[in-house]
Image 1 (cartoon, rainbow, N blue to C red):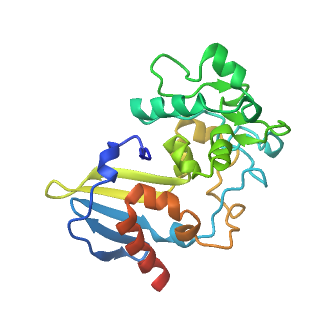
Image 2 (cartoon, helix red, strand yellow):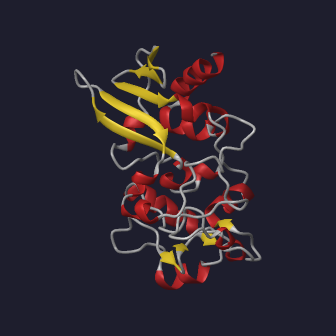
Length: 244
């Protein structure tokens, strides 16, 4: 099962089946989808935008200085894991990685992959997540877990930490009326990075550099959105977005 976490709600809240659903526009910039006890709110502007990940083709990273040549992307701070189950899953998958496709295989074998005994964060090695293969690595640059998923013919979201495959999608949870909950789905912003965000030279959702896809986010990130909100909500939302 895909782990879906945003740090503010248990994973099972994202997998409840719909009891009754309706789509009602909240205002000019949002769409609302009611799913049982959850009211999903979606940033329409982001879903209609042409944002796309620029890793390996113009991404400036999230460091204090733009550094496209380093190929670090948003991996500089490592990956925060959602819970014990996700930590176990990542550990199990890491054990299957081919050393020829995993640059830091020796580091994992000698010192482990987690930053501490709590096992809630991947180690940062030489400025990036231990799973990131650097440019020039013979086995291929990029996330070793992502590469292994492709090699296995499986979706990368089944292999990677949830915080990694969800970016730049952010879900904010808050209590709603009558024991309901409100989940706002939007683009990740600089402030969501906390202190690091204040020091970043670049954030991919700002400006226009990353808005160059030939497809809108509702389609290009369809698999990710579906994993977060569920198939029924996604299908209804997509119909709503593309019909107008």
